[in-house]
Length: 201
Ligand code: GRF
Image (cartoon, rainbow, N blue to C red; front, side, top):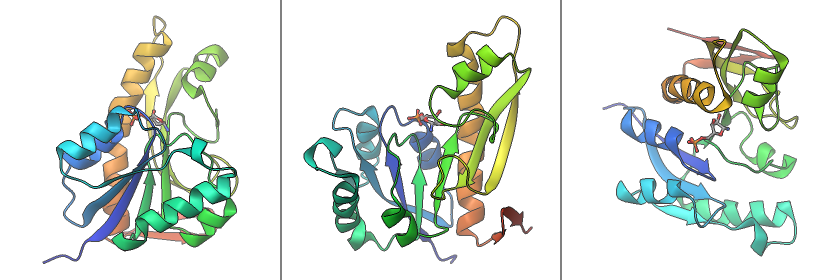
């Protein structure tokens, strides 16, 4: 039997990417815990419906980002986490957390990085007038949305696209490449060389 990597999925909102991860039942990955900073997030219900433990840690209960993260670390310490997946987690992590899970945190972002980092990436892409946008799965470093790129998928922008339906098209690609990237990581197929991520077959 293939050994499994315990994965912690961090969410803040609707959790469609979490759903895609759960639905893809990756043999080498075990979604051990879901961490959520928003007690009202739909993602919590999605996790509970699959009997996955949820740790709700509300940022508002803590004075600083680091205290908030220390609490998260305490809560996930019992799950032997080998990979942290930021799947719509709306908080920027501090170097404290990033270094604790060095090269073991990945994020999904709704643009073809390095274009349109930060928030409202889909609106930014539309306003800029690009003909192609998409999504990126990348390792998380200290600089926001700038870590080494694991996978990207392009999405053409149609003339009639508005933010909402373009986001839908991007989501469809996210739900494909995020599980793929998690699978590659958990199978030990990703090698970091500087900024480049090599994928072995
Ligand atoms: C996704 O578009 C992802 O790229 C961004 O946040 C969104 C999360 O959506 N980081 P969901 O909560 O997975 O539905």
